[in-house]
Length: 279
Ligand SMILES: [Zn+2]
Image (tube, rainbow, N blue to C red; front, top):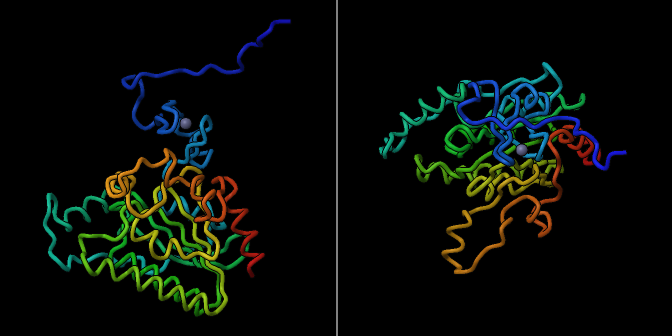
């Protein structure tokens, strides 16, 4: 008997120039070239290294809710430019660019639907739209979703994908959304209704420091970057080297900031169980 059996499959390493656009995606975790169809079927999780790719807001909603049950709220709400912000790019240009590339009007999608036949309210932030940052529209849409959950006595799920925190193109208006969303959640909490916060890669800054950090249960996807300030700024401030997995889900679970890490394929089942348990 041979000591080593024949490998069951061959890993083909493709050079970048050999990868036709739209067919393959290079894994950001292990650099393997992944066939897009396989990646889609695997809920955009790398089959080799379990790297969780970013999901768009509608992809996330389709993955979590029962097919055809999602009813979107405030679909046509879009951002104004209260400060007439001009930087390397104006706010108006940045909004137009991200609306174009994502097909979204804003970074948050909210609404109601069924999760394994249970009525829930859901809000999702999309990290592809100005880093999922919270401006007036994201704050207002999330607040209205929370208020709908309170009024209708429904559990609430917010899935955050927000690398940007508060949207500084809107200055003070964006910071006010932190207080507004948090206050709305306190009314939801007073009614003894469940709020489950799901943190995906990345959830940072003003989003993490407001609604995303306030879940009765806080769940994270594996290896998600979660925190307030980025590690480089913290290292410069405290003049100490940080551990390598600092601000990753696994480190934060060990240190008590989050309650559990759930693989993407198990997320719907886990949320369903938790909603049953919390009532
Ligand atoms: Zn991988």
